[in-house]
Length: 211
Image (cartoon, rainbow, N blue to C red):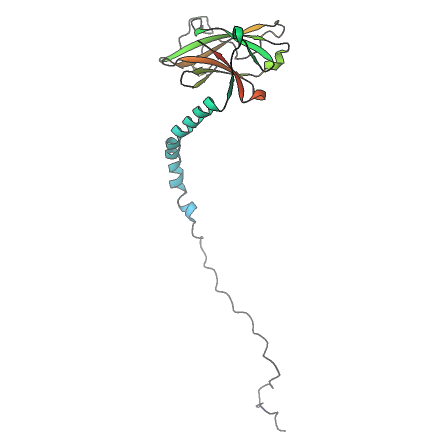
């Protein structure tokens, strides 16, 4: 028997078209071991060491920005005739302000503020039909440079002072009522005003001029 044209003994006969594709080539194995670290991982300790340096470099600009915000991003409500300010559904006025000479320790001994500081006392009178109108107020002392100092700071932790508040300690106290508040500043600071603010009335605040 004569083999078909193009065929040889021991070989299959070619069919029409191309032969089926062979199996895919095997991929080279991934070498074992840890993957190379990225740039952030290799340099993380150096970046961490830079954080304090960056904080020190940015601190002056951040403080300046806060000072500018305190000075210009708020709207002061100033006293009218008689020294009264209408704010937060209440009226308030500064009765007295001056150096705090009556500070006592919890044992009743005279209290002396830390060196190079000065303590101040403000007495503010409030008048309101509902004491809740002024509850939760924020109190601060503003100096001539626009810096703000909070009431009852750590420098007065050893002194017996009332809790900073705009409401009387006695809930049954009639209106008007008076509250006392204490502040500490550097001895070179010149007080300018007592600020009273309420989050519900931001950015407006009552500015009680001290002189």
